[in-house]
Image (cartoon, rainbow, N blue to C red; front, side, top):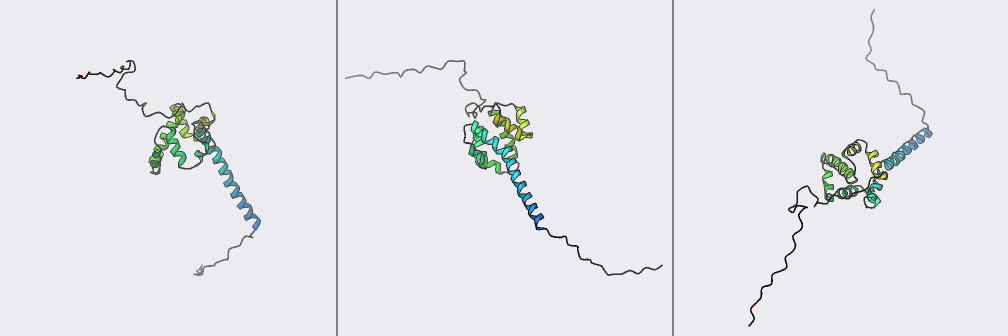
Length: 172
């Protein structure tokens, strides 16, 4: 048997699907609904507890909504200068600073290291506990409360000030 081969390629036109404008409208509405639902979820999972955390720490709640400014204020909350925010613009440094910020934030609210680790892995849960739980803001650690010992031990009484010595001048 001999088969003949052909070099012709048979091209068939694609079958067109019927266009239904109602379906494209419905899919557009679905996408818009999903974006709105995701936005509401983001607000509930992040902005709501952050607002409350800012208020607990004595700041205005709206400050938690402004991107960049909220990080600046959070560094102040944990006792660091606000300009540390600029380090968050450096890749990988920002990740390390995020971990540091979470650890210190939980500490200024009186929580343990174990709670800080839990907050790193389950951020919304940790933020809700800080925001709506019994945690109270203890205040940022002051720079003078460092771990270096002071020159005067706390058990020794302070030295009383000596009155100035008056030297009599000869009169004529």
